[in-house]
Amino acid sequence: MRRRPGLSARLKLTLSYVGFLAVAGAALLAVVWAYLLRYVPDNSRGLLGVSPNRYLLVHTFVPAAAVAMACLLVFGLAGGWLLAGRMLAPLTRITEAARTAGNGALSHRIRLGGRQDEFRELSDAFDSMLQRLESHVAEQQRFAANASHELRTPLAISRTLLDVARKDPTRNPRELVERLHVVTTRAIDLTEALLLLSRGGSGELTREDVDLSLLAEEAAETLLPLAEKRGTTLDVTGGAAPTHGSTELLLRTVTNLVQNAVVHNLPDGGTVTVATGTDGNTSVLRVENTGRSLAPDLVPTLVEPFQRGTGRTRADEHDGVGLGLAIVAAVVRAHDGTLDLAARPGGGLRVTVRFPRG
Image (cartoon, rainbow, N blue to C red; front, top):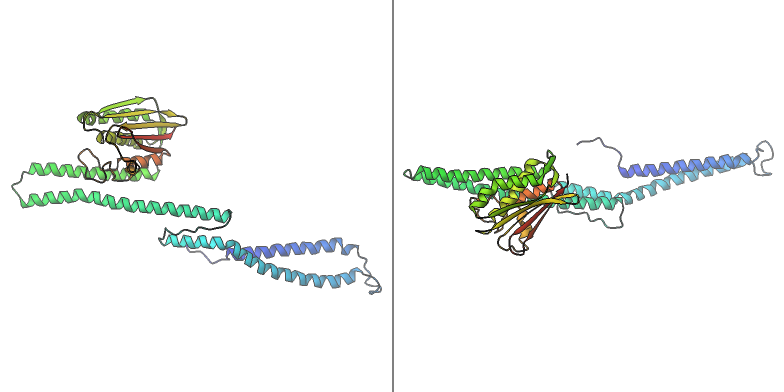
């Protein structure tokens, strides 16, 4: 935004100091005049050298007071300019840091020293904002790179299948169509997951009263065929867990957690337990499964996009696109909740989600 040039804050503060001194000096002279000179007799028509009188005091005091007032204003102007510059020096550093950040250098920090005051508080808040922005930009860049890689894979597979079919006209077209259907479906699922992740992280939600226990039952009913196919026991327990939020996103969150627990379970005979309830002012959803042991340093990374329990690997038809827990984390943040992941002692993962109680 282009603005008309105006006075600097330093000059405004300096003029304010000088104006205050001028008013204070004028008030002092008025007090002297009101309470001193009024009690001195006026002998201007008598002998001037006999005793002090109002005429002598006026003609000697007023010029001296005017000179003192002028010196006071000059001193106030110089002192005010120096003091204002010293006081506003932290603001100048903050402004320079803002310009540097505006040019893309988010790694710059002010790190203003000294004791706590308004400028130091502003500096610390600005440094914290820059740190969050830098982390967010780095996360977005990493996410964009991973998303590009994941989206490029099904497209490359589709092109390879079409090239093979073009070079081999005798190949069974039904097999080609089936493989293209699988690859295209995976690309669509990935695109929808990316859109949902973006929506969940925006925080712009249509909120209503939701019961997590009902969502857990619905998700379990939807995923029951997958659990039976894998030989996994799916158990839903607990009571009502009311909260306030987007029904669609919360249902997708519960579904992602249950699906993740089913997919990353024991090959046969595993168990998935879904429990809901309340704890004080929070509603709690807990999903845990049996499975292989997880390294402690791997568990915190599972909420990163495209991160799977076995690392960044190719997924099978049930393994999803590696965005399940990333979507869960984004939706939980948008609903002011907390997400806790912990490796179970006997193997598997325990996920605990807490939302403000509705």
